[in-house]
Image 1: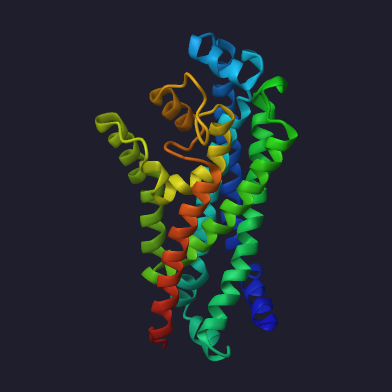
Image 2 (image 1 turned 90 degrees about the vertical axis):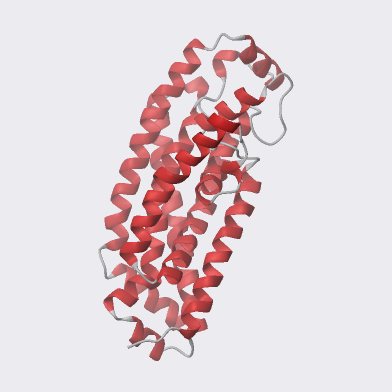
Length: 294
């Protein structure tokens, strides 16, 4: 297993893919955090409604000092981790495309050991992506959000930990999808369209027309985003334990602003997304035990 792990790391380091995807990941994460940070800070400047007063009193803090940065940081991290999903797709589907999978399978004891080595290797890469996008997103909100509205040190550590967890699961999710589909182009195009467009439209449509507020809590993109986004929503009582006086529409709106519409809590989002990851990873595992190589 040790040699397989070394081989997997060499495969990633000797190609341009890891940094070719890391660059747009950190740039977009920084840009989104910067933009949403400015927007959240503006909201903090004009928060004078009675509902805001109720939230502030329940949290025991002044209205002007609400941690607005937490509502913005999730957007940067979540967009950045889309590239971690894409990176995971290449783990197995990329080897089939380049036809190196034959050598990989024939020189390993068995296919189970190959897939295990890939899982461990790309889990490390997922953690790296999680740390990187959390760092630049933190920088983004630090630039645009007033100091009194930034997360506390404990909240910041929680966001970083959640980002690392989301990065690991996102990368493994990408491996599973790529392994099942066995096509880099098909997997990447479908995932990007689904994660960035289709699911978001579905969540907004179902809530706007039928007030279905839980869809984001069960679908893959919503639960992936909810691992980090729900931390921001929870700080405002919009996820986890609901604050007194917070109506359902305001709760969903705060979740949406935090990038986690429908999220129950960060750990619930993590569990549901882990289930999606396990389903696709197990499916890819099973398919590749019987798939022919040439």
